[in-house]
Length: 224
Image 1 (cartoon, rainbow, N blue to C red):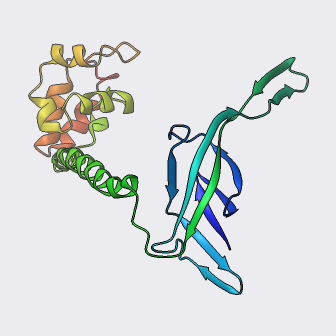
Image 2: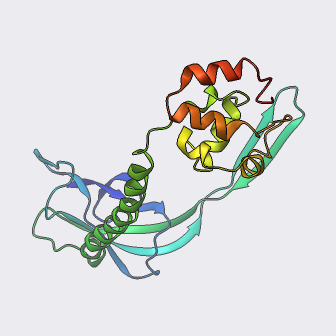
């Protein structure tokens, strides 16, 4: 009789009284340990396959000792770069001996019983945290912005800077003092004259495009 069981992230084909080296287990030497993730059990011609694990099946073992595996050399090299790196690695292992293979009727281990509630609490907390940003994003999207580049002297970078400062419409720009506008766009490269921008924005907000166009023909980069 043999079984295929998953132990510490790897699958092993095990039989009773067989000694197996697995990745380091947290169990102390001399103590018993059991594994519930049994994928297959074969007893002569009778073969049981799990989907993916067999319910009630269990492999019991005893920890013999903890040790380190043989040293493995890890060498890295990059051609024409002068890069060479050499490291040694010894895997932490545990030697166990298989004591029994139970096909059904085994009770779940304490570790398996405690694992379920922890996963539920972790998933519940992030959902509550992510709910608030969605509401904030919806508020930002409600206002409709105007094309501030229609004001003589305002380019794409300045329009973006003003929008970030909360000035996204002609009406908002018309209410803003020219000196305040200069402070907002201080980080934008170039020599910008903002004296006429509020007045231009007021004409645009009132829909007086012909009057605005006639005035802009007389301006040079927003400067009279």
